[in-house]
Length: 105
Ligand code: FES
View 1 (cartoon, rainbow, N blue to C red):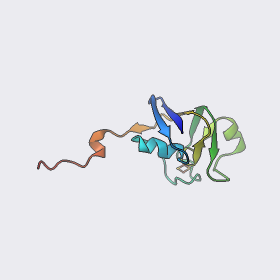
View 2 (view 1 turned 180 degrees about the horizontal axis):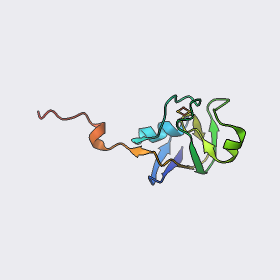
View 3 (view 1 turned 180 degrees about the vertical axis):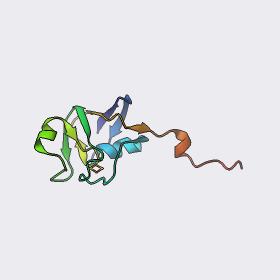
View 4 (view 1 turned 90 degrees about the horizontal axis):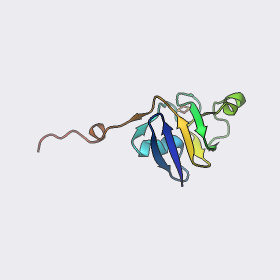
């Protein structure tokens, strides 16, 4: 089990073994930008500020130089160590939107 830190939100979440960074964030109520969730569309692409990842799929949609520059695809990235990503578009789901609205009875 590893931890994932999401900046600039400043939240730290647990990454269970086998969970992608995006799944770990979602379990903690944090939404990262996403579309395909299978490593091809690049909608989720963000910077890895610290730590190491490996990929669930063989050819994630990143060029070698992008990987070298620290870009990652969190929807298919697995944490190899505690990691920090920089995703300014990450949003925290408030408890109000997670709960179904009360009807007053
Ligand atoms: S959501 Fe499409 S590459 Fe991550």
